[in-house]
Length: 374
Image (cartoon, rainbow, N blue to C red; front, side):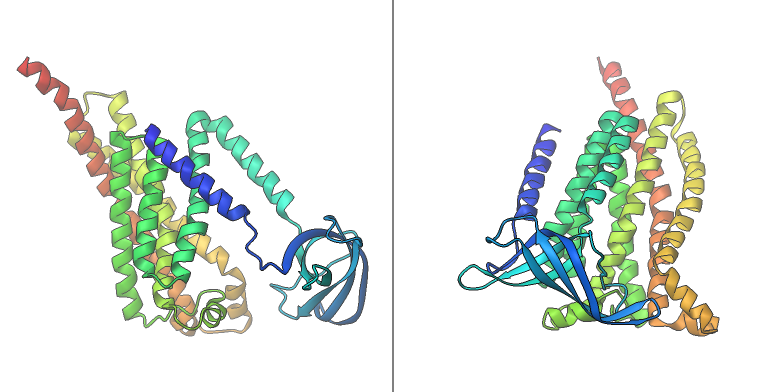
């Protein structure tokens, strides 16, 4: 266990160091600024939408040159989901372009500075997790943070580099599942059973992704920003495989959750009633699995529905027929994503109960066998 934790900490420190490095070009840097004055004379307002350019007077918090006040420009294209609109007193993140002499040549507004509030939210989450689950919560917090770093530093760069998306995603998720489950449950029967169930869930999801992708004639372009990503990377990415990877990532968390719930339930039943037979353990596990699957599949449906709520509202406002909606590429891919994740749960729950009950009975019988031989 110490080796696992040490490996995790090394990976976390490496990832944190990589994240802290400034990836911008040498003639550009990102700094914080406060909006002192706003000029909206070049904006055209149409309802709640704004098109044009804001000219901001900002005061930089970092002393880059002798001056600290500059004009910053904010272009609004009318794409409301990406445009940012600023008011006097706002704290924002700006990109400062430097010329060859190291002087400020241009300042461009990037976004509102939201990091402090996100940090507060994360700290509250961490405190609640540790207070409730204590040592297990602390380990879960480590694995949570490490998972974000690994996805950002390993998985996404690997996908951008053109490696086979399903292969690199499967390997990354297998490593993450091992890290998370073993960190929380240890190398125990519970941990090994949950890990085995999760691995089976990943394999089932991968196979279902490839089958459904061919049958539904999907191309992967229904994902947000997929066209921009394809153009940005020189048209060399396989967007369908990236869609498979996205489905696999989404389903892996639910599969891991169900597998751990089933393994923990079987272990608790055995500890509470050591005289339970293997068949009794499996039957109890199956009954618990029925309840877990019943709510988890609905959870997946609600999660994916919440992600495309505005799209569903748009369909209703246009009186689009249900037949047309269900056959649209975007909707079909989301339905497939939900059903594939739910199907993997139906496999993971009973299989994990079977594996866990088998491991626990085998572990219990080994001391008895050793005692008989002596």
